[in-house]
Structures are given as structure tokens and as C-alpha cells.
Length: 284
Image (cartoon, rainbow, N blue to C red; front, side, top):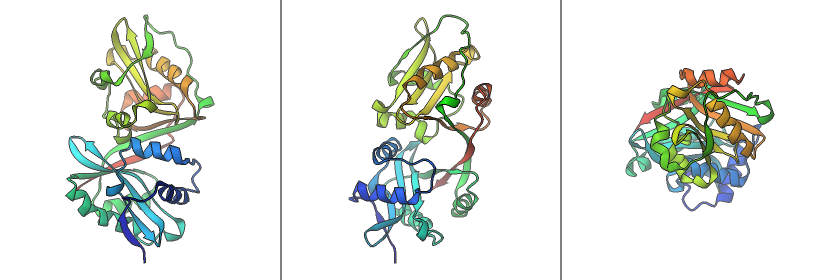
């Protein structure tokens, strides 16, 4: 019989082993340090994360991030998985139901997750528990050599230079939608050393910016002031940040479906969505 309990005090080696086994059939694999970075960026809290154990072995798990989302204290499913031989036994639902009283006691007001739209079984399970779709996201994944961004003549004289997070308020005003949990400035601030932020300036005025994680190839945020779009600024920012890429792929995760400016930008560079996700929320 599997026992569900908190991950408080559980070694990271055991956590990584379970993660690797649950996702061993996935095309993209992560090493232990990459998993550490991913969980830290997403706000992983071991004492409020839970797993099903068979003896000393983790056979199903949910890693919960804790933070503030849309002004409410939120738990975020930063990674869930079940070992192949234990699937179909309802362990993920057991883990979630076990976790709810502990999350409420910690003051968590809502639970947030993202799920691939083509994973119909998972979507159905979440809906039965009470989750509702809050947004739809596109995601893009491509090999860096597939990125073809021609050097468009920029109208006017603009400089591209590094900026820091202190200009967060100015940057946020350029966005057409609120970033998802993993792309928010809260996530970036959890490990700022992993990101570079490049800004486009006309004299001293900030006109656009791009947040990039070189180790993963993740284009985390990109936005240009509405009055300066279609002038090559976004293209120039992308061309600059990908020079720093340490990965053979580029990822643009969780751009809001319906944001025409973002969709048209990638489409103009012959980049099509790789798939879609639902963002889902359950009040606790």
C-alpha cells in the first residue's frame, strides 16, 4: 500500500530519481542541476509538496511552488508525475486531496496549474476535481539553427544594452498580457543570476526588453512599447540574446492565445506554435 506524505526532509537525490523515472520516455531530459534550477525558479516548497511512497521509493509526486498570483497566495503545480508501473491507480488524485488541508492551513487560497491541451485524460481529471480554465497558452520549441531572423533595418537610432530588474515597472507597462507563473518577475527574482535582460533604448528612453535564460534557451519575456512596434526592435532583441544561448534549442513558453501582437511577431519569422496549454485554477 502506497503512503502519501510530505517531501520535507527527503533527499534531492531521491526526488530526482523519481522525476527521471516518471519522465524517462520524454524526448527532452534534464539533469539534476537543471531540475534544481527549474524547481527553484518555480518556487518549490518541499514541506508543502507531496508524494506517494512504496517503501522508501517515490512512485508518484507533485512538486508545489508557493507564491502570490493575481494578488492571492497560490500553490502552483511545478511538476507532477507517476512511475509507469503505478499509473492508472488514482495516485495523483490521492496526492492532491491529501495536500489540500495542508495548503489551506498554510494560507493558500487557490491552486494553479498548466496542462497540455492534447492530454485529454489529465484535463478531464482536473475538471472533475473542480479546476476551471483561466487562460490558453501557445508554446514554441525550436532548434536554434531553425531561427531565421533577418536583420531588419531599424527606423531610428536604438541601442541594445543590459538592464536590471529595477526597471520592472517600466517593462511591465509594455506587456499585452500578464506573464504566466514561471515567466513572472517573481520567478525571475528567485534566481536572477540565471537571467539576462536586454533593453532597447532611444537615448535614455526604454522602448523594449527581452528576458532570457541562457542555460535553458528560454525566452522568458519580450515586449516592445506599443508606439515603437514593427520597427525591428523585437527582432534585434532576439538576435542579441540568442548569442548567449548555451542550449541547442530555443523555447517560448506560455504566450497567451489571443494576443495578436505576439502571434504575429513569431509568425513573421516563420515560427509556428508547437502546441497549446490550458492554465487552470481551483479556489481552495
